[in-house]
Structure formats: C-alpha cells, structure tokens
Length: 226
Ligand SMILES: *Cc1c(COP(=O)(O)O)cnc(C)c1O
Image (cartoon, rainbow, N blue to C red; front, side, top):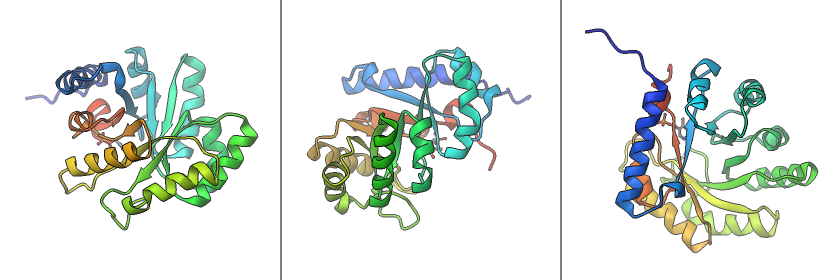
C-alpha cells in the first residue's frame, strides 16, 4: 500500500462536517461555532489551499512566526482573521495588537497592563479571552480556576480591558469533559459569551459543552513535525 498524501482541503471539509454534526446534536446553530484553522509550523504552501477553500480564520501560537508569515498572506487574500492562541510576552504586546484580531491567552496582570497601554495607543482592541489553567498544571499558562473570577474583574476594572471569553487547554492525559464544563461554568458566572476550547481530538465534545471557538490544527493540516 502507498500512503496517501494528506490533503488539507479534504480534511477541512471533514472537520466542517463534524462541526455541523456536533452543532446539530447539541441543538446549536452551526454559525455559533467559529473554526480556527491552527496553521503553526505550516507555510503558505499548505495554508493557501485552505484559504482558497473558504477558510478565513486562522490560529497561530507564536508572534514571531505569525509576523513572518501572515502580512504577505493578508496582502494576497481578503477578509482573513488571525488569532493568537499561544503565550504572549508583555514586550510583544504592541506587535500582537498590530497583527492579531483576537488574543486567547490573557492570563496575568503585567500582560493586561501592556495590552491596555498598546490598545490605547493603537486605537483598536482585539477580541480577548482569559486563559484558564483548568487542570492547575504547573507548566501550563493560564489563571487557576479559583483565581479566575478575581482576575476577570481586575481585567475589567483595573485595566479597562473588554474580555469576551475564556480559553482552556485540558491536560493531555485526562478526560476533557470536566475541564470544558468548568470553563463553561466560570464563563457563565462572569457573563462571558465566548468559549475557546476543543482541538483536533475533542472539538465535537467541546461544542457540546458550549465552545464558540474550536482550535483545530492536526485534523486539518496533518501531523506537525516534532
Ligand atoms: C497547536 C494548538 C492547537 C491545535 O492542536 P491540534 O491538536 O493540532 O488540533 C490548539 N490550541 C492551542 C493552544 C495550540 O497550541
């Protein structure tokens, strides 16, 4: 047998069908879920066919990689939306505000201060999500669940940041459902409408728990080089 070459466009269509199916099962409108195609490590040769197939929203986890790749793609294609899903250093806040339409990794006061300052200067604000470290993993970014309410309040009151949602990345070796449920609960009690959760392996489940933004890389582009 010859291994078939991975085709991102066919894979994208399958992911879209699965999202539609999960929405139907959950009694939700398919347009209530935004698919972020996570293109980290992939170059324009892999990304452009996916744009040509109609995908407009992309996720990247590094500011530097995104700033090397996306300005040229944006010149060639209309209406692209770029989301930062990885950690953001405060000293890259200005670059991030200039480059991204959404930031999913707001998780500490020093970053809030940097973002607030750069938003003020730029006169535009990205969509912002607070990242919650739902599994309290020491190596992982995000605020601890028990600190989330106070942190969200501080974002709003001390930094005047308009937070729209929560983001979580469940621990790799645990069932994701309780983490999705926890994020949904914290979002609800803080009046946050958006939930960024669900990746290639579990986006359908995340949709059942209310995800509005699913971040799907491997299931579209194929496995990344280690
Ligand atoms: C890479 C990445 C994803 C996509 O993961 P896949 O398993 O490839 O779908 C989602 N979210 C974040 C934060 C990531 O870094």
